[in-house]
Length: 195
Image 1 (cartoon, one colour):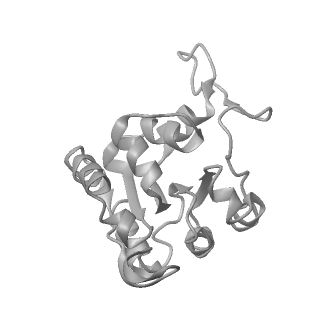
Image 2 (cartoon, helix red, strand yellow):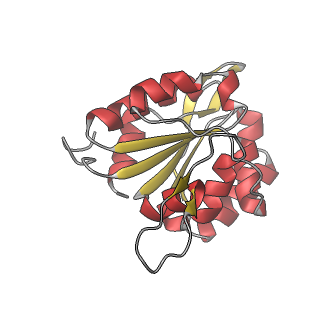
């Protein structure tokens, strides 16, 4: 686990995608918040089917971003006099982030990132963040994880500078194998080396 207060004052976004492992992300958000990190959670529509935004809002003490085009979409004010306009939320967030952790990362979000698709709040945020600040922790069924398309996408993203936390072997909803979200200690330790 990371040293106490190592995350104090750090800006971390947590991307949550549609995977049963989404409930485990609550513990990551809680830990980072307790360590003094400023945590912003960005959820895909699929993620909200497993865990509610209210859970993450309560743990992070911040509004959860679920929709790129919602009525309450915010623009950050200009940072200085040279800026002529307010920055859209995803751009303003991307500029201040120390890291973006996507946990759990579904095969869908990995495919979107690899293909340059930005059609929701999370994938748009990823496109706005330098690859070196993005950490992806996959979680999915073993057959999905080992699918050659998913593996090719992972290799491609690694070559572009994205970081991956390998999934663990063990019990899955549909049996056992590789594809479990890495444990909290592994994720926090990895994240601590990147912020």
